[in-house]
Image 1 (cartoon, rainbow, N blue to C red):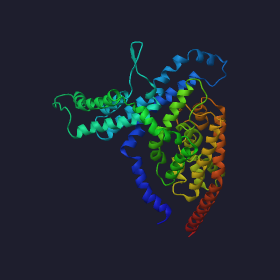
Image 2: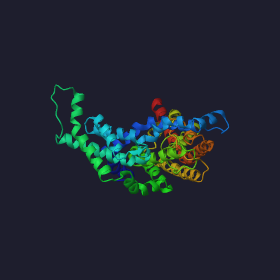
Image 3: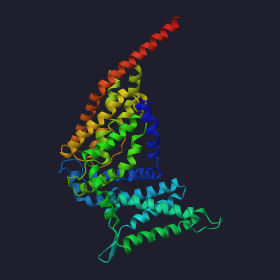
Image 4: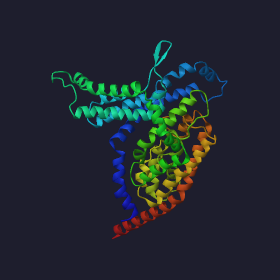
Length: 428
């Protein structure tokens, strides 16, 4: 058995199962469900700090009304964990064929019960900090526990069963009474009676991972894994994303919080937006350079056709037509630059960001924007981000080109041979 066959048969199955593991899938879907709020909320940061000279009218207006402008941000992206918690609980309950609404509501209640209200001037105030990226890991933990309690009660019939004549919506509410009581009592014991700050405890546990994930090594690992899995037809983002995305969301939220204060000294280099706009230009493997090579330098009719077909999706960061059409999957010649290109652009982009040559990202534009526009918006209007994107596209082209030429020559020769065979057959 060849190495490629071994990877395809022995690795593909287990990795596909990991990407579809119930809890990881619920985390992934929960984060994705909150993306509209994160994306729209982050744009209010641009409005609060417009990328124009400070003496322009819009900049002066924004400075005067910054408190009001940031209210939508603080009630959407700033408390993203609240939305993610509901989405996580909803999707996990749905995967168990439980009432998804009960799962989502239980998860939100459990998250809120990890936060102790503060008495300020005779009124109770709920601190919002732990509803942002800071509380994401706790939200994942308590949401999963809450839904598992709901499942346990349902499986063991520890519920209040209503007569069949009762409307289903009312029946579901009463079925959730005992699980809700258990979750509320459990979280109240932890937070109120024993005084345990789950957020502080979890922060201490995951702190080494958070720090390591923003290092050059921590940035390269997910990049290499994603393109490695894609090389064998496994959706790399689906395998790596559920594990890495919670970290990326924490980085993005923290950067946004600092940016909302007006500071440019953002703490993290590598939120998901760093990968999206500087590394995955044209899709996983940074294939836009390959597409350009196919269009302008291909002698093979097939590859030129694939390039023309893939250029528009590639501009909008969709590269399945190239990955499966060229193909790159299980193609020894194109796998090499497919892996090397993102490694090179990751190192360059990481150095450029950490040294201050390019601003760190803190806004999440829609991922289907062309990379130069997305990078400009993600960095709050840094024109140098556009330059870095152009440089990375050029690097992608240069790395892919020699491998593409070898493959193109092979494909063109094959087409000529087939054409000659076809002509001989017709003459006979």
